Length: 314
Image 1: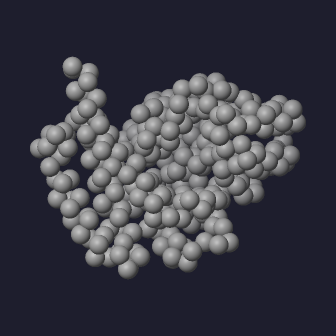
Image 2: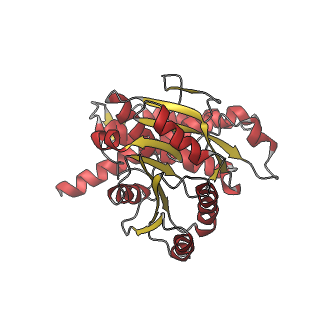
């Protein structure tokens, strides 16, 4: 079985060096008969990303470098898919820490589980100075803080489980190609998120077998900027833009004002009132902020789509 690992990166050379070091360390224990490659796709970096990758290539030819000039993580991921040949493809973020034996568990899963796609477990790694309220509200902060933890089990995803995260997934190439590559209208660098959720939804809609593997474990360092209400709001706005794009793709018949569904305006007003009323209760405030900023992002997404359609017909 041939495995391709794809990592898209942009101007994060220091983080990238850490994950590649983790992979290099685990490759030492990888038998020579395991056919694999690690493709790092550089998405317009202007830092020392190329030099960092070259160091690893010189030490192990299984590391490969690819430059993608079109802006957006999903463009980089799709480019990596087209330039690799593995029967299975694993995707990792450029800033994760691989718990041993992550690579061994990938090969074990390929050989012993029946699946089309697999989501791995992701545990946040908080810095020492993490505010108490952040860890106390870990569930509410999932999203802005990357976390995907359904325990140390292997089971098929069901309706009670949230979708896998692109920071740690393993797919059968045949299944991926059958549902289409990553949606290049979504993803970091394009003003929205949700490229992994969109892929998950398409796999499930096509009846593909998608399983969760709690033993395919990575840790995701929590950057200081993520532990702020400003980042929380920004992330929820981008999530709202994703929801708007998904609604627009379904061509829902909604009553609108200026291209924006009418139901969003009272929702925004209620959200403002709710935030003001919960300002001193952190959990309630986070819930209110989530509803308000998702609605704001949806409003922006709908309005932007209207503006684009208007310019196309001008």
